[in-house]
Length: 158
Image (cartoon, rainbow, N blue to C red; front, side, top):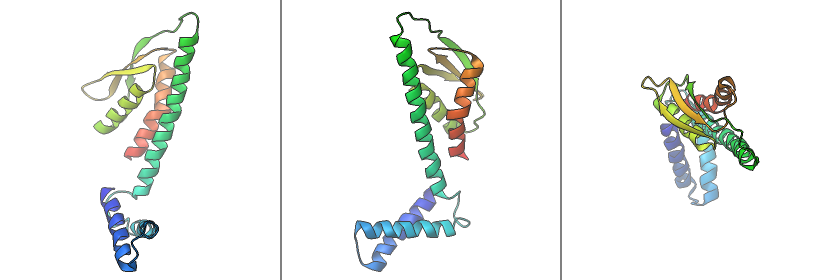
C-alpha cells in the first residue's frame, strides 16, 4: 500500500511539472489521474489497490463510532437507574485474528468503548480477557464483538 501511495504522489508531482501550473487544483487533478494509473498498474505494484484499504479503514472508524455511541448510551442507562442492578463480569473472548496488530487494534477498540476493559491477551494470542460492566450472557457479548469490531478489523487486514 505504501508503495502505491508513494507512486501516486510522485505521479501528482510529475503532473505539476508537466503542466507548469503549481496550484492545489492541479495537484488534485494529478492525484486523481495518478489513482487511475495506479489502478491500471495494480497488477505490477505490490499489495491490493490502496483505495480499497482506505475505504475499509474509514468503514472501521464508522463502525467504531457507532459502537461507541451505543456503549455510551448503555452506560448512561446504568448510571441513571435509581438502583444499581447491573451484573459486572469477566469473560474470555476467543478471537480468530492471526496478526498481532489486529489483536492489539481489536483490544484497543474494545477498551475504548465505555463499559468494557481488556485485561490481557493469552500467550498463544487466541483469547482476550475482558471485563464487562453489564454482562448479559457470554454468547451475546461474544456475538456483539464478532459481528461488529472483529469483522471490520479482519477486513482491514485482508
